[in-house]
Length: 372
Image (cartoon, rainbow, N blue to C red; front, side, top):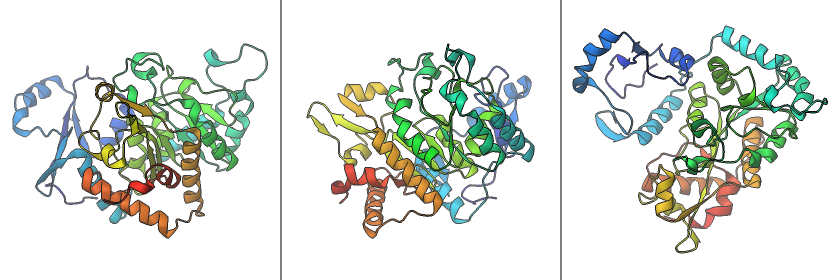
């Protein structure tokens, strides 16, 4: 499966043994398309020639001989991939799927460090049977990842995190979780064990991030086999789309855009404190504010960051549930507003027009700002 947007070359990654790999299993899946060299002598040989053939894709890329910002290129590639109705690039083996389902279905409790000290079962332990039923009877689950500072700094609420602006509070997702459960689903929370534990009062949630079945393979199983993935602006939200899994991107900042058509998103809101006003959608997309990638940049501009509310998060999840159930109907007005939003994106940020901003969120915050 090729798109023909670039000359065909062998992609090689030079990867010394001491280089840390976040998820080696993910790298293993990619080796179907990419040659990984780990031999020290071979790496030294190629390193001397690196400047002649290295292709840096951190910020830019060439498509059809034209250089462009990498985020814009991703959208073009994804739209063409979907247009041709190609299968997902990555797939789990049948064996890995079976192991993942069995392991998920056998999970009874969260980590001992997060159990209630009383002899009674905790909230998470009480409903493990529901999880077993779902994995046995062809049920479904939603995977949830909410970034905080635990992974990077060892404590979830540390503000020294340079990417603190991307964080959100797991507790604000409780209404959305309940909506998933009410529709017959289960929620699996993923992440790092240093992240904030999810409340034990919430039913039908498996806090995998604090469990003892965490593994590289299980991470990818949960990203790839869920009905849809709820994300924040963090690395994990890029993985489900590789497996054609619909994604709900919440608390998005900066105001980029998901690449896949089966995605919904809502951004954070920005307040310019010096003028005591909320930034417009055009300002959030503009070069002045739309390319901030550190907390310090927002602080220097005296900008407050307003996270999504429980109600906004729940409305977005309900929209995705209705979409997947086939019961979602957008009005002509809804579609017209989305088209206007896409035109603004194409004009101000070129981040493409895939996915949709949450219908209720768009009406609430930006509906009156959509004329170019």
